[in-house]
Amino acid sequence: MKKMNLLSALLLCVGFTAVSAQEFKPGYYGIAVAGPTTETLGAVKLGGNGYQIGGGYEFNKNAALEVTYGNAIKIQTATSTSSVNYNMTSLFVNGLFRFPVSESLVPLVSFGRVSGTESISVTGNGTASSASATGARTIYGAGFEIPLEARTSFRLHTQSTTSRTNYATIKSTTAGLIFKF
Image 1 (cartoon, rainbow, N blue to C red):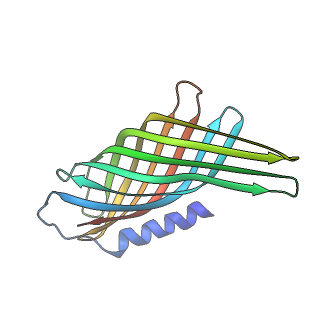
Image 2 (image 1 turned 60 degrees about the vertical axis):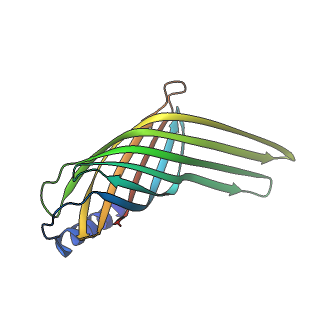
């Protein structure tokens, strides 16, 4: 059902408006996106909704560099005898490559690095424990943008990374807006 609603919204955006052909000007833009993230480590799978905010610089109509900060997963659960708090924050640096197929659809791929911190605290039966870890990984992704007007675009983007040391896989799918300055 969620996929159908997202697809309907995307089709509405595509048909809503098309940007007229304009001369490209290099420049800065802002990013505000949100969506689900999952982390899989063997049989354990954590998930939650996260966000990314940041900015980028377009060198030309096909290439850009982006830096975003986000809270990928935040989970808080509690019962009468225990609680678990898990949080993952990340800094993304991505090269973004766009391949415009029309004025109303721009597929893209990304490749970069993500540096993140994960922290967990568990309390149960009067005992508390906590741990945290920091690391950097290569990240890659694909998606598309739909221009809404001359300075605003809708973006749907999926990114993935796998750790070589513990084979944890992190995947995120974000949707949001791009604002050119």
